[in-house]
Image (cartoon, rainbow, N blue to C red; front, top):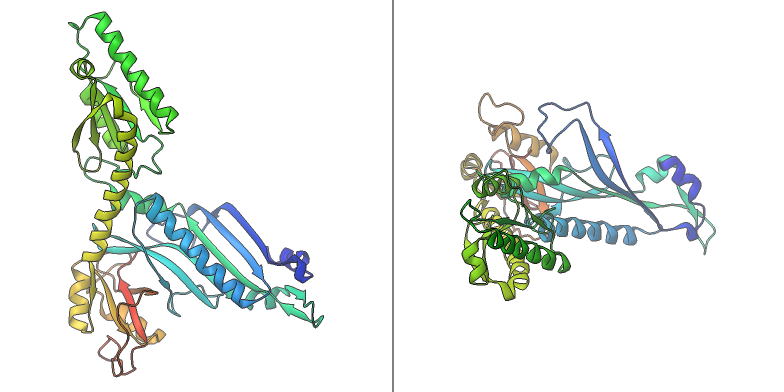
Length: 387
């Protein structure tokens, strides 16, 4: 698309130029595909922007990264670490790359969540994307950014929140947030009682719809309530509502949380408000649990033996690093187990990012974590096995 940019951009009035698109990408060069996480074809969102000044472009890089971080934390209930990629791991055509990194505690591996790149003037010089400066009338090259996020987010969400019963969906992205299951309908139940029960279920469903809660009433009569419970647990619906004849008489119903399995008795009069609040609690609990996992599996060390020990115990490691590419290659090579395979838990540690939030400053005399490196450390870098 950059040849088109060269045609579209002529004057400073044409800037900034911002394009966003969704499209499918096919990549043939990789091995070991994994559903959602690394597939030969995937859907992604990508943006390409051009600015007159570097300051404007730099500002947008971080703004977009913040938006990506909010997708993970506010929608998917997944904590992420924001940072900058090392020179080895950055986008090859850019000046620098920023990233959000997530962590899957079950496998002890990190995963890149989304990236926002500052391309500098590398591509504008290559494709002659210039504008006329309004003050000097000189032709100047634009500063460019690119940024993207993919359907990999679905795989990250599944692996972080799911359990042995199936999916556990964060409420804000669940297509069904509440499912209503009528219970206690037996052959001995009077027809008028059955009708009253179904009316109560439908009334609650309508009330939740009006409150903009995504609700579904499962009124199928060819499946038992127990079968339906398992069915919706497998699908990860955040809250299940059970209403039986006894509940109807007491003007109440039972709500079951998917994330904890906790059963709550809720009064009919406050049902809509309580369920809406419960969905917020489910999101907060999922985020809290994932955050605790991330925190407990993030280790800080300056010692190489500790580095390898933490890595083999399914952790990610913050360690002082010199930033040199040959040293980074050595860290990955020497932290791998013997007979490791690409993509396996035995693979060596790679740099994930240089976190923006540096836990402590690099003290004078601090050496790089690799024992053979004699260079002083420049920053704490997050290392770990990665998808």
